Picture (cartoon, rainbow, N blue to C red):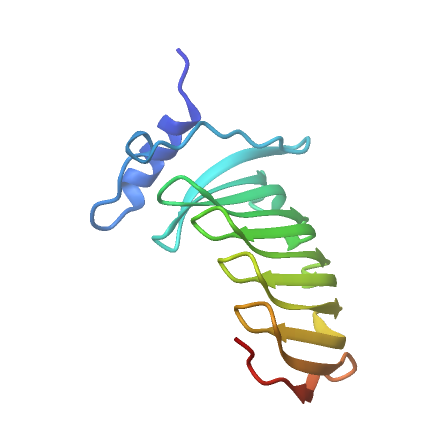
Length: 171
C-alpha cells in the first residue's frame, strides 16, 4: 500500500493542531520529498502553529540535512540545511508572495558571509557581512524605495554597531 507524503504529514498534524488548520489537499501543496543524507530519514511536523516543516533527522533526533518550512498556503517559507544539529550552508526565506525575504549562509550554527534582506517589493532592505555570528565591516540599510537609509560600521570583536551616516528619504 502506497501512502503519500501529504497523507503522512496531514495525519501527524491532525494530532498536533489546536483549532482548525486546513489539510494539505485543501491548501494545494504539492508532494515534497527531501533528499536526506545516508543514516537520516525525512520527518514532518507542525512548527509554531504557523508552518509545515519537513526535515532530515538522524535516529538520535539530531537534525542533519535539508529543512524546509512552508506557509499554511503551501508556499515555501524557508529553505535551509543542518549539519549535525547546527545550521550550515545557504539560508533562504521567502514572503508568502514568493518574493525572496533573506539570503545568507550559516557556518557551525552562526550567520557567516554576505547576507541580504529584502522588502516584499524586491528592493533591498539591508546588506552586509557576518563573521562568527556578528555583523562585520560596513552594512547598508535602505528605504523601501531603494534609496540608502543608514550606513553602519560593525565590530566583529564585540558584536557592536555604530551608525556612520544617515541619509534623508528621497521620493
